[in-house]
Structure formats: C-alpha cells, structure tokens
Length: 178
Image (tube, rainbow, N blue to C red; front, side, top):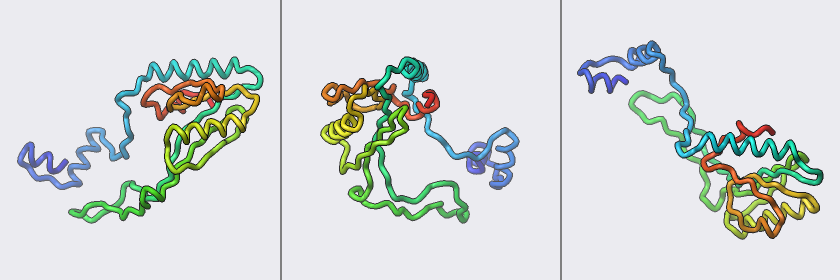
C-alpha cells in the first residue's frame, strides 16, 4: 500500500499509516482462499439435489460410496508469520522426495459408516481398478452408487453405478447432506 501511494501520488507514508487507511476503508488482512472460476454452482446444486433424491429413495442392500484419492506430504505449514522488515518470510521446507509421499484411495461407505482404504505407489487405471475390485469384494451383494471425480473404466465389471461430481467441485461437501 505504501509503495502504491508513493508510485501513484509521489508521497511517502509509513506502513502503519497505510494499514490504518486500509482498515478505515473496510479492508482486513486475511488468508486467501481459492475460487474455482470454472465451477458451475447450478450444476453443483443440481447434483446435490439428485444425490439427496437417491438417498431418500435408497433401496435395501444399496449404499452410496464417496471415493477420492489422497496424498500425504510431510512439509512445513505456511501461514502468516512475523518477519523482520526487508527480509522475506520464509520457512524451511521439510518435504520429502516424491517417492516418499504417501498415496492412497479412500472410500466412505454410506450409510454403513465404514471407511475402506488402499495405499498405492501411483494413481493410474490399473490401481483404480484394483481399488474398485477391493470395494466390490468388501461390499458383496450390495448395490453400490459411487460419487467421485474419476474415469468410468472398471465400473461395469464391478456392477457399480456412477454419480460423477461436476467439474471443479472440491467444496461439494457444503451441498451434500451427509
């Protein structure tokens, strides 16, 4: 802000003065969140409504399964920190090499309150098919409605019914009543 005032008006002001002006004009220092520009709120609402209808009319011996891939990286947490003026606010990275991260598939089975996981060395078609086989074996005799954002291969083989998430919908948990 102080640099902007100097550039724009040729006047120097302190950082504290700049902060006071920002507060006075209704600004506040916040941590930014991602906004997914390609997300379609209407598609998300329609998807949530369809899913709620599926849950309401659920037949016996059927379950909804929420599937996603996960990664665990060991790394420093980046937040707001105090740093000396004129020096960058940096934190040493503790991230391991790519080979040392943990990759896994997770399925949350509703309404059984069951979680099924499988660790993997990489995400690809074969590993996804292996996970779907594992899912089918754990839920023998059940109709499976799967909610995910992955490809369709191996679903027919395992008699799993897909409900694909709309694109750019990582925040769909706000629309889906669990």
